[in-house]
Image (tube, rainbow, N blue to C red; front, top):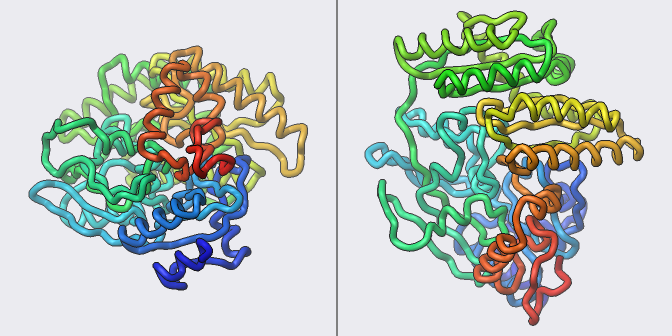
Length: 469
């Protein structure tokens, strides 16, 4: 029996996509330049047991599995290999439980981030991780990449909220990791290990997350700057002042103009950079933090700065921040960076991004979770311009090198996937890389889970998976 016949018999034909034209839409994520292959099959299970059936069938046939959420990733982590099974969790969309006493929620991996947040909000609770793709990205995908977002400067990233996971391992075992209690130190933190592993250690089938009480309304401070370096100085000044904003986002004129051209929001301003700060501290503390941020913006050279008194206007500015990436995609292929540096190094790093643009003669638009040093330079090239593409790739590598030189990391929240494998090898010592590979082999000895991702070379088992990557 072929693998396709076996999976069809186990799950039913309605769970399979065999049409090559439809399969093509599942073969890659949003990383424009990451390579991808043609899958043998796309499977859309609805239960943990069905996921386990698929993994065990792939083990028997020694066929690689590429887990996929909504496909909003920006590193190629969900890209298909030739002849693989793409395991899409898009139909695993049940919110299993929201517990207001324990302040936790349990959800299947296909639940969209914003849907979970809305369901929690209806019970007076809040799930903080809010990537810019929150209206489209799934909880499973957020777990796979340890997604961050706008408010993580104060509230942390996905790993900080994952209490427990249900996972199908590379050996086909269905296991539960973590706990539901507020405390727990029994054994290694295997749930934390799975978060950010990009589908290379297991297929997540259920997620239990910690929730917070609903927070106070935010106050917004906006500032216009003539340069990204000046805006970076304002970011450093806010940190030095001891303020921990609930968001501190940088958006340059290229991004705002692109959003205006697409959505006609009328947000373009006579400034090179806009810095958006928010505080959700209640009462007088919030007023004090907003006033401090405003003073920091002005001291750093803002050409204009003010605390917003119009909530709709403030929300529109943050909506433009979330729309920046898809708006820029309309201008041509976008190569997206995701470096993170210490907050004190933000001005220097922004200056180096500008230098990389000049040195390689490419257009780089800048958006950033500036408050925690996570920068997203967006390198835009004309379509079908091979020379520009080569220059963009050179700029990409230069920016990675600069981030590492300043004590940073090659990826803050998008993951390594395919695009950052070389950067990861530069960041981690050989001994540490060997530790990672040892963990991979322990949990996926046949090497069938997303092979070739994160590390450029994967050690496959002698029996079967050699050559799958």
